[in-house]
Image 1: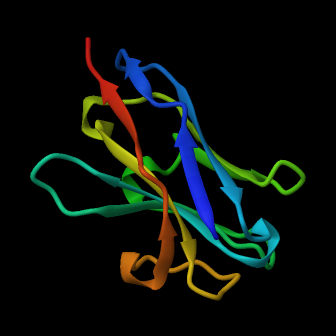
Image 2: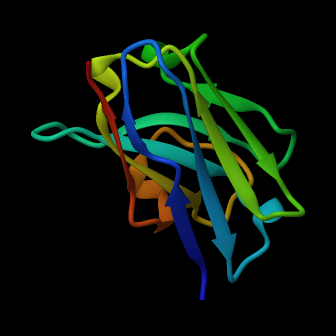
Length: 125
């Protein structure tokens, strides 16, 4: 059974950094695009970043461009989200998700079929 498990969240001060990990099991990571989403209280789920498994092309929402990077380690079946210069607006529950049957990214959460349980990121002084 396909499964994703996030880790690496926590409390950080503004300007700080965190690296989130998304460990995949039950399927071959190299066959699917994987995205990161976040959801803050009272807000809709938002696509943050994604990495394609076809050509390693990446996508970032405008608010994180230049601050976040995404990478994957196929041997470890893990996708990483490096988050730098974190701001209070980045506070949210972060999820990783697997694209439904595709190596290419989508900005739409409905096109992802496997989700992790989420890891909380809180940016506060």
